Length: 120
Image (tube, rainbow, N blue to C red):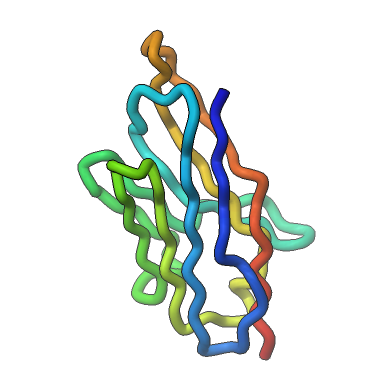
């Protein structure tokens, strides 16, 4: 079994910062990529940022220059530093991991989500 434990969400005023963390544990041989997605009420889930095992990153245009994704491979943990937050960043943020199990089976797994609320 695999677990993705997210933390760091909360309520912040516009212009403020938050740092999300997501730690993966369980039957994981290696993680190919980890990412953060978000879903606002009434909207589809969208990619925020992703990072591969060789530290290649990809960002949504809406967060470029404000958010930074990073990872600690030794801890199977991914971080999302969110600066200059805007009310439109309000959403449930989900961690995602694309990983290989010990049988080299490929899996895609989601965390339970953490709420980020930005007040104006």
